Image 1 (cartoon, rainbow over the protein chains, first blue to last red):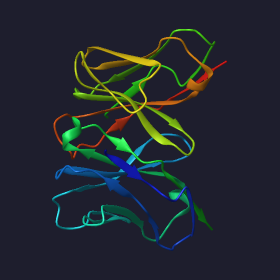
Image 2: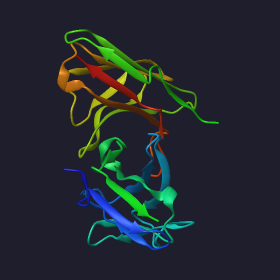
Image 3: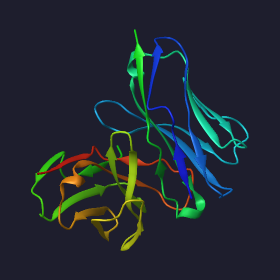
Image 4: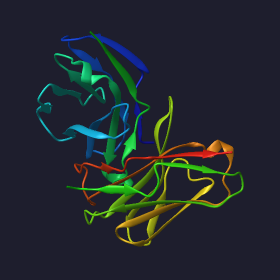
Length: 115
Length: 114
Protein backbone atom coordinates (compact mmCIF):
# COMPACT_ATOMS: atom_id res chain seq x y z
CA UNK A 1 0.00 0.00 0.00
CA UNK A 2 1.15 3.51 -0.73
CA UNK A 3 1.17 5.79 2.26
CA UNK A 4 2.66 8.99 3.62
CA UNK A 5 3.24 9.34 7.37
CA UNK A 6 3.82 12.59 9.20
CA UNK A 7 4.25 11.87 12.90
CA UNK A 8 4.43 15.46 14.18
CA UNK A 9 0.96 17.00 14.50
CA UNK A 10 2.48 20.27 15.74
CA UNK A 11 5.87 21.90 16.05
CA UNK A 12 7.25 25.12 17.52
CA UNK A 13 10.38 26.89 16.35
CA UNK A 14 12.02 30.13 17.37
CA UNK A 15 12.28 32.79 14.70
CA UNK A 16 15.59 32.62 12.75
CA UNK A 17 16.24 29.01 13.79
CA UNK A 18 16.10 25.96 11.53
CA UNK A 19 13.39 23.32 11.82
CA UNK A 20 12.93 19.82 10.39
CA UNK A 21 9.51 18.42 9.54
CA UNK A 22 9.43 14.64 9.29
CA UNK A 23 7.94 12.58 6.49
CA UNK A 24 8.18 8.87 5.79
CA UNK A 25 6.61 7.13 2.82
CA UNK A 26 5.75 3.64 1.75
CA UNK A 27 5.73 2.43 -1.83
CA UNK A 28 7.11 -0.55 -3.68
CA UNK A 29 7.35 1.42 -6.92
CA UNK A 30 10.96 2.28 -7.92
CA UNK A 31 9.81 5.51 -9.56
CA UNK A 32 8.02 8.14 -7.53
CA UNK A 33 8.00 11.83 -6.77
CA UNK A 34 7.91 13.47 -3.35
CA UNK A 35 6.49 16.92 -2.65
CA UNK A 36 6.01 19.38 0.16
CA UNK A 37 3.13 21.85 0.22
CA UNK A 38 2.42 24.73 2.59
CA UNK A 39 -1.08 25.76 3.64
CA UNK A 40 -1.27 29.10 5.47
CA UNK A 41 -4.33 30.02 7.51
CA UNK A 42 -5.86 31.55 4.38
CA UNK A 43 -6.28 28.01 3.07
CA UNK A 44 -4.47 28.02 -0.26
CA UNK A 45 -2.03 25.19 -1.01
CA UNK A 46 1.44 26.37 -2.01
CA UNK A 47 3.96 24.05 -3.66
CA UNK A 48 7.36 24.27 -1.97
CA UNK A 49 9.74 21.61 -3.22
CA UNK A 50 10.03 18.39 -5.23
CA UNK A 51 12.34 15.36 -5.03
CA UNK A 52 12.43 12.54 -7.57
CA UNK A 53 13.23 9.00 -6.49
CA UNK A 54 16.15 8.82 -8.92
CA UNK A 55 17.59 12.21 -8.01
CA UNK A 56 21.11 11.86 -6.60
CA UNK A 57 21.15 15.16 -4.80
CA UNK A 58 18.79 16.56 -2.20
CA UNK A 59 16.45 19.20 -3.57
CA UNK A 60 16.78 22.80 -2.41
CA UNK A 61 14.60 25.86 -3.03
CA UNK A 62 15.76 28.97 -1.22
CA UNK A 63 15.33 28.39 2.52
CA UNK A 64 13.72 24.98 1.91
CA UNK A 65 15.68 21.78 1.49
CA UNK A 66 14.56 18.19 1.35
CA UNK A 67 16.62 15.63 3.29
CA UNK A 68 16.02 12.55 1.13
CA UNK A 69 17.09 9.22 2.61
CA UNK A 70 15.91 6.61 0.14
CA UNK A 71 16.90 3.52 2.14
CA UNK A 72 14.96 4.81 5.13
CA UNK A 73 12.08 6.00 2.92
CA UNK A 74 12.17 9.42 4.49
CA UNK A 75 11.82 12.86 2.91
CA UNK A 76 12.14 15.44 5.67
CA UNK A 77 11.66 19.14 4.98
CA UNK A 78 14.24 21.48 6.46
CA UNK A 79 13.38 25.16 6.77
CA UNK A 80 16.37 27.34 7.55
CA UNK A 81 16.19 30.74 9.26
CA UNK A 82 12.49 30.47 10.14
CA UNK A 83 10.31 33.51 9.66
CA UNK A 84 6.96 34.40 11.23
CA UNK A 85 5.35 33.90 7.83
CA UNK A 86 6.41 30.25 7.89
CA UNK A 87 3.67 29.52 10.44
CA UNK A 88 1.33 27.21 8.54
CA UNK A 89 0.31 23.60 7.93
CA UNK A 90 2.86 21.61 5.96
CA UNK A 91 1.93 18.53 3.95
CA UNK A 92 4.20 15.86 2.53
CA UNK A 93 2.89 14.16 -0.61
CA UNK A 94 3.86 11.46 -3.08
CA UNK A 95 3.10 10.41 -6.65
CA UNK A 96 3.99 6.72 -7.19
CA UNK A 97 4.17 5.73 -10.84
CA UNK A 98 2.21 2.53 -10.40
CA UNK A 99 -0.85 4.29 -8.98
CA UNK A 100 -1.98 6.00 -12.20
CA UNK A 101 -0.05 9.03 -10.95
CA UNK A 102 -2.38 9.68 -8.02
CA UNK A 103 -1.21 12.35 -5.58
CA UNK A 104 -1.27 11.06 -1.99
CA UNK A 105 -0.92 13.26 1.11
CA UNK A 106 0.10 12.82 4.71
CA UNK A 107 -1.83 14.15 7.70
CA UNK A 108 0.23 17.32 7.95
CA UNK A 109 2.30 19.18 10.55
CA UNK A 110 1.27 22.53 11.98
CA UNK A 111 4.32 24.74 12.43
CA UNK A 112 4.24 27.78 14.69
CA UNK A 113 7.15 30.21 14.57
CA UNK A 114 7.69 32.10 17.81
CA UNK A 115 9.04 35.70 17.73
CA UNK B 1 -1.81 32.91 -14.29
CA UNK B 2 -2.86 29.31 -13.76
CA UNK B 3 -6.19 28.78 -12.17
CA UNK B 4 -8.33 26.15 -10.49
CA UNK B 5 -11.71 27.53 -9.54
CA UNK B 6 -14.23 25.94 -7.20
CA UNK B 7 -17.78 27.11 -7.59
CA UNK B 8 -18.43 27.99 -3.95
CA UNK B 9 -16.30 29.00 -1.00
CA UNK B 10 -18.98 28.16 1.59
CA UNK B 11 -22.04 25.93 1.33
CA UNK B 12 -24.71 24.94 3.83
CA UNK B 13 -26.94 22.02 2.86
CA UNK B 14 -29.56 19.90 4.57
CA UNK B 15 -29.23 16.21 5.34
CA UNK B 16 -30.45 14.11 2.43
CA UNK B 17 -29.93 16.80 -0.22
CA UNK B 18 -28.03 16.06 -3.41
CA UNK B 19 -25.01 18.35 -3.49
CA UNK B 20 -22.84 19.31 -6.45
CA UNK B 21 -19.35 20.74 -6.01
CA UNK B 22 -17.89 22.08 -9.24
CA UNK B 23 -14.25 22.55 -10.17
CA UNK B 24 -12.87 24.13 -13.35
CA UNK B 25 -9.24 24.42 -14.45
CA UNK B 26 -7.84 26.48 -17.31
CA UNK B 27 -4.49 24.72 -17.72
CA UNK B 28 -5.53 21.86 -20.03
CA UNK B 29 -4.48 19.40 -17.34
CA UNK B 30 -5.25 15.70 -17.75
CA UNK B 31 -5.45 14.91 -14.04
CA UNK B 32 -8.03 16.25 -11.64
CA UNK B 33 -8.54 15.34 -7.99
CA UNK B 34 -11.07 15.79 -5.22
CA UNK B 35 -9.88 15.71 -1.60
CA UNK B 36 -11.52 16.30 1.71
CA UNK B 37 -9.51 17.91 4.48
CA UNK B 38 -10.27 17.27 8.13
CA UNK B 39 -8.17 18.25 11.17
CA UNK B 40 -5.62 15.58 12.03
CA UNK B 41 -6.39 13.55 8.92
CA UNK B 42 -4.74 15.67 6.25
CA UNK B 43 -5.98 15.53 2.67
CA UNK B 44 -7.75 12.30 1.84
CA UNK B 45 -8.36 11.46 -1.80
CA UNK B 46 -12.00 10.91 -2.69
CA UNK B 47 -11.81 10.48 -6.47
CA UNK B 48 -9.29 11.03 -9.19
CA UNK B 49 -9.71 11.47 -12.94
CA UNK B 50 -6.88 11.08 -15.46
CA UNK B 51 -8.92 11.83 -18.59
CA UNK B 52 -12.37 12.81 -19.75
CA UNK B 53 -14.94 10.27 -18.58
CA UNK B 54 -12.20 8.31 -16.74
CA UNK B 55 -12.19 8.08 -12.97
CA UNK B 56 -10.66 6.10 -10.16
CA UNK B 57 -11.72 5.73 -6.57
CA UNK B 58 -9.49 7.20 -3.94
CA UNK B 59 -9.28 6.22 -0.30
CA UNK B 60 -12.75 7.40 0.78
CA UNK B 61 -15.20 7.22 -2.16
CA UNK B 62 -18.22 6.03 -0.17
CA UNK B 63 -21.11 8.45 -0.37
CA UNK B 64 -19.58 10.36 -3.28
CA UNK B 65 -19.59 10.17 -7.06
CA UNK B 66 -17.87 12.25 -9.73
CA UNK B 67 -18.41 13.39 -13.28
CA UNK B 68 -15.94 14.53 -15.88
CA UNK B 69 -17.69 15.22 -19.17
CA UNK B 70 -15.22 17.88 -20.28
CA UNK B 71 -11.49 18.08 -19.69
CA UNK B 72 -11.63 21.33 -17.77
CA UNK B 73 -14.46 20.43 -15.38
CA UNK B 74 -14.59 17.87 -12.58
CA UNK B 75 -17.69 17.64 -10.43
CA UNK B 76 -18.05 15.99 -7.03
CA UNK B 77 -21.54 14.78 -6.16
CA UNK B 78 -22.86 13.93 -2.74
CA UNK B 79 -25.84 11.73 -3.58
CA UNK B 80 -27.54 12.18 -0.20
CA UNK B 81 -25.63 14.54 2.06
CA UNK B 82 -25.01 13.48 5.64
CA UNK B 83 -23.62 15.36 8.62
CA UNK B 84 -20.38 13.34 8.54
CA UNK B 85 -19.67 14.87 5.13
CA UNK B 86 -19.27 18.27 6.72
CA UNK B 87 -15.72 19.15 5.73
CA UNK B 88 -13.39 21.26 3.59
CA UNK B 89 -13.27 20.00 0.01
CA UNK B 90 -10.28 20.76 -2.19
CA UNK B 91 -10.02 20.29 -5.94
CA UNK B 92 -6.65 20.03 -7.69
CA UNK B 93 -5.31 19.48 -11.19
CA UNK B 94 -1.99 18.45 -12.72
CA UNK B 95 -0.48 17.32 -15.99
CA UNK B 96 -0.68 13.59 -16.55
CA UNK B 97 1.75 10.74 -16.98
CA UNK B 98 4.60 11.85 -14.74
CA UNK B 99 5.72 11.64 -11.13
CA UNK B 100 7.20 15.13 -11.10
CA UNK B 101 4.19 17.29 -11.83
CA UNK B 102 3.15 19.95 -9.37
CA UNK B 103 -0.55 20.04 -8.50
CA UNK B 104 -2.54 23.27 -8.51
CA UNK B 105 -5.34 23.71 -6.04
CA UNK B 106 -8.60 25.57 -5.85
CA UNK B 107 -9.46 27.78 -2.92
CA UNK B 108 -11.54 25.09 -1.24
CA UNK B 109 -15.23 24.70 -0.44
CA UNK B 110 -16.24 24.52 3.19
CA UNK B 111 -19.39 22.41 3.24
CA UNK B 112 -21.65 22.23 6.28
CA UNK B 113 -24.44 19.64 6.31
CA UNK B 114 -27.13 20.35 8.89
